[in-house]
Image (cartoon, rainbow, N blue to C red):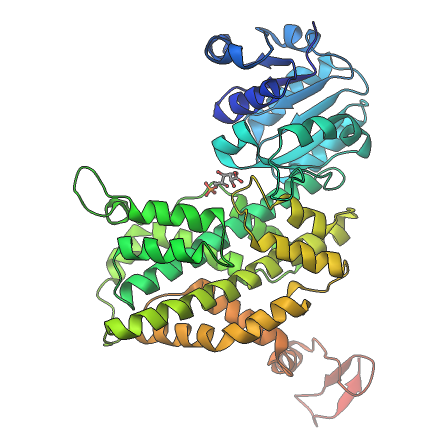
Length: 477
Ligand code: 6PG
């Protein structure tokens, strides 16, 4: 027998993905650098389907039907290159290497180019949904050639999550690094969603005076409405959890320093290069990094804050409703920024990415899965060339309805000294985009003053310079 697919790298994600293929009726070759793990997988889960345990790279490659489909699930960066170098010489033209890790899309582009010269398809694939998703159905974002998707697509559709309407949460995102790019932005949005939820939590706690258990209930209610999403759902779970050792709310015994593995940071770094304002996502990354500066925070603890009084019980309920509005409006802005980044990359790298299709495959399986994504899809379905999600009528109207509350929440936060970088950045983005005039005109004047950097005029074409040091007349530049 030969295997239709092989998975090398059998840590949790790799093992679960291999089991998912096997449970869906595929014969799966499995391989790991240390063979004991391979045997352990087959021993523990062999009854779930057909596995072929391969001890060596050669055995692994020999077990695969041709053209070969070889999934590598190892750490991003050097380990991925090492595995590619190990297997590439054993492969033949037409074979496919699928990298399911959180690779940087620039690495994926390089690897795709190098392997293409050998006739091998390199399919950088974003996979979201954590361990549980890998086993029971993740959202899958493959890049690479169309030809590779013809061969892989049906298998990926089978193992992927299904949206509520039954559609598989996988699509051919675009050529070379497009899949990993889109996965990266997914993670940037994930950071922003988490930050916004965190701010909502802190406002409910410090301004409205609710307990974690009460806030869990509020999130549960929100989860039945337009905020219905995996992250809101698990937030309620985390907030209602009580630490067994101390009897305190779990959230009060965890060190308040958020870690990160890098994909959110990449989203912002690349947005800066592409010139795309992803301020909400950036604030989420900065908020994590600020939280980790323990010494700086310690040294700042005595700094003055406002003297404000928390809300009365009667006011708290109304405030919670406002926070829901602020959270929803800010969420629209983060997704607007994330999709803008994808659209800009599509232009830059000449990718054929369908933004509606991307929102559709995020409806199930992935960490940011949410009812909301159905609405984004509807927006792009209605108008594929939508300049921004904010130009969609439905979203524009929802923000119009939410904005008073959104502003009030930020005012209350400011008065009480509760930091809301996500809410505030989102509102600033919204107000800046809709502004008739921006102070950028003044910036241009300053640049022209100190560096003769020139400016354009509102009433005539061309570039101009004012002779600031002379008679202040204007010259064409
Ligand atoms: C997913 C997740 C996954 C990863 C997170 C955590 O889509 O399944 O995004 O890829 O666990 O990105 O990232 P941080 O450690 O950076 O928070």
